[in-house]
Image (tube, rainbow, N blue to C red; front, side, top):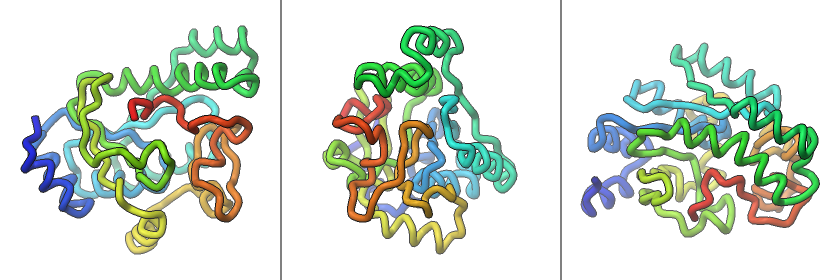
Length: 231
C-alpha cells in the first residue's frame, strides 16, 4: 500500500504535514485511537481543527478517572465533532467480576491482563474492523518496549498499518506543543500522572521515574495492556 518513497517522505514531515500526506495517500479507512492523554490530545487537535477524514475514537473501560469524561466532553464542545466511544461487552465484565472479583486484577498478572483484554483489547479490535491505517500517539521514550517501533509499520496481527507520528518526540516537545497551541489536557498530568490509564491501575510517578512506572504499579511486568503487544 505504501511505497518506500512514501514512507521516507512521511517520516521527514512534521506532525501536521505527515497527517495531511497520510490522508492524501489513503483517503479513507484511517482511524485514530485516543486515550485522551497529552500525545493523543495533540493529534486530536490537528485532526479536528483541519477536519481530516480520520475516524477518532476512545475506549471507555468503565474504570476511568472522572477527569477523562470531563475532557472528552470539553473536546466535543470545543471542536464540534464527537469522538466515538467503545465499551466492553457487558457479559464479559459481569463474568470477570463475578469470577475474579471487582478488583481481581490486583491478584495476578494473568488476572490483570485478562481485565485489560476484556475492557480494552476486545473493544479496540471492534473499533479497528475494516481500518487500513491506525494512528497512535506512541513515543519511543515512553518505555523500552517502544524503542524499536517504526513510524509506519505493518501490524500483522490486525492486518493494517500503524502510524506513530510522534514516535521521535521527547516529553519536553509534547509539553511545548501543548502550551504553544493551547491544547486542553488532563489536570492529572500536573499532579504527577504522566501515563494515565484506568483509575485503580494508575498512580502518580516520582521525579526521575519511567513514565510507565505509574501503570500497574503493584506488579513487575512489561507495563503493557495488550493494545500494542505486537512490538
